Each structure stands twice: as structure tokens, then as C-alpha cells.
Length: 229
Image 1 (spheres, rainbow, N blue to C red):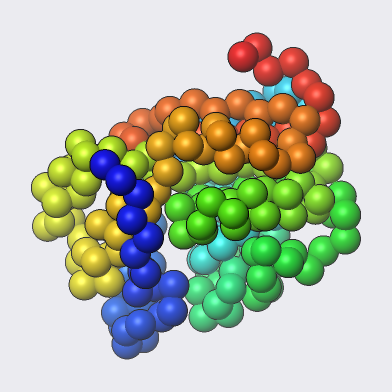
Image 2 (image 1 turned 30 degrees about the vertical axis):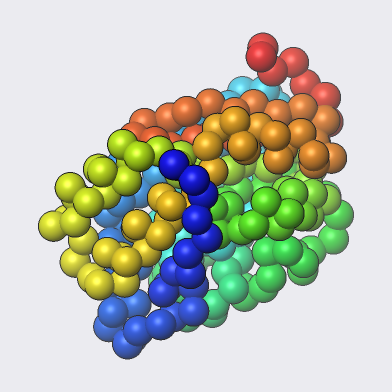
């Protein structure tokens, strides 16, 4: 299945306020039920273990309402691990989370932070929006801002994945989600394509593994570590 770049409606808030809110609620359910939270949790837990840390700071890029990192924070807290979150999103309207997490609007390709500002930089369902050139650009910018690693949780492009999306249409409450879910799979990357792109970044090493229901999890390490790969 060839990658096809397809504009997504939520990227430009192409809908009413109610439609956008419905789509964001759909995304929350998708991440809860279909591997979004569990994949990010696995990546963050791996970083804690590798760094032998009990407390880490994390910048969530394209973070929206921040449900995924907040849920991971809650789960890890029960294991005695502290995750300090900052959210960044292009649209300030997406950041109304009411959770008390620090949030600001900004450009993912020109992050408004100094070098080494956070231990980790994370993104969920963001990289598939980017062209191959911009994937490399974003990864390098995120590596600049992090001290340890960049975490990427995204979709895997596959015809079976697209078939699952069509089959799951009744679960989506909003027209934006129904449109964007198809567009997302069509423009997602395969594991091998992502591996090639990561090889073009300034990461010292990286780990890339498939996760539940056509998710991929990436850890791009800023400094050399023993990955076991």
C-alpha cells in the first residue's frame, strides 16, 4: 500500500467547535482502547529503566488535551516513578485540558525551548502528518531539546490496518474522526520506512518495535546506549 499524503481536518480545525470537541473525544477513546496509552507507557517505562531514574521531565509535542501522557503519568506514579509533563500544541484551542499541566502553543519544527530542556520529548499520532524530510527535521529538533531521548508513538501503514478502520467506523462519533482516521493510515509510515528515516537523523542509536494494533514505538537516543538490538 503506497503512502498517500492526505490533509486531515483536525489539523486545521476544519469544523465547528462541537465537531472539534467530538473528534478530540474520539481520539481519547482510540488512544485508550487501541494501543495509544499502552505504547507510550512502554516507551516511557523503557526510558526510566535505561536511565535508572525515578523522576523524568517530558515534553509532549502535538499534545492536544494531554490525555495520553497524563494517563501514563498516573500509571507510573503507582510504581513510584514521577513524570513531569509539559504540553505543546500548534493550536491553543486543543490545549484546554483543565488538568493543571503546563501547556503552551508552539511549532513542533521550531520548538521554543533551549537545548537539553527536557529529559524526554514525546509525540503520539503526530509523525505521520509529516513528510519524510520533515520527519527527520522534527526528530533532530526534538533531539536538540531533549537530554536523553525522543519517543515516537505512531501508526503503521498496512492494508489490514485500513480494513480495521473501515470496520470500526461505528465507533467514531464525529465526521472529522471518520475522515481523519482513513487519512492517517494512508499517510502513516511502515516500520522499514521509519527505520530508514531515523537513520538520517542525528540520533546516536534508536529502538523501533511494532506494538498493539498497528502501532509502532520508537526511542531515538541522544547519546549512545546499549539497546539490545
